[in-house]
Image 1 (tube, rainbow, N blue to C red):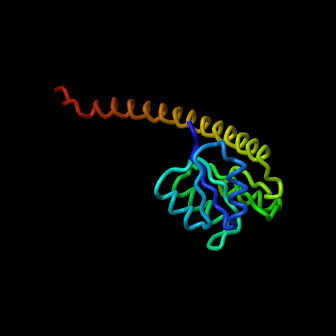
Image 2 (cartoon, rainbow, N blue to C red; image 1 turned 90 degrees about the vertical axis):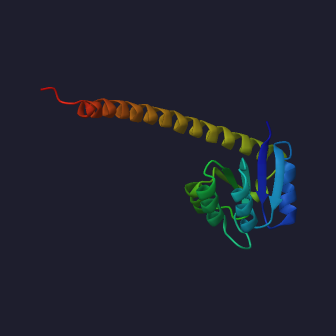
Image 3 (cartoon, rainbow, N blue to C red; image 1 turned 90 degrees about the horizontal axis):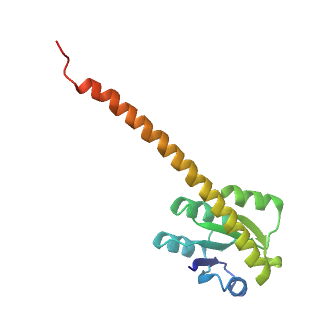
Length: 159
């Protein structure tokens, strides 16, 4: 099954480079602004977003925030010309999986980066799913016990 990838970059040359680097992943759509990205996310789920940090209308943190609010299951990798540990920490804290310098983008590097990040993301989602199942089991037990206790109040008192 192919993944739907959205490439968001205001530079057409960089968009084409990223599309070429991940071309075999699946269906690729590209846009030039954060607004276009958000509109697409509102319309349909996207599996992976490759997001330039500096866009004409938003910065990467603003786009990440809006995407996470709309579709928190979306995987985001920031691809930027502004390589710094502070930026990498900020985008990861905001919800991105990774922050990749544009000068490192090659087909092999991007495929490995995407694969590694999606595997890690899948493992995280799997752990969350298991935790959710455990929490649901606890809630089911609480509901069962509460129903049993409430049913005692529903029975007429014997004289």
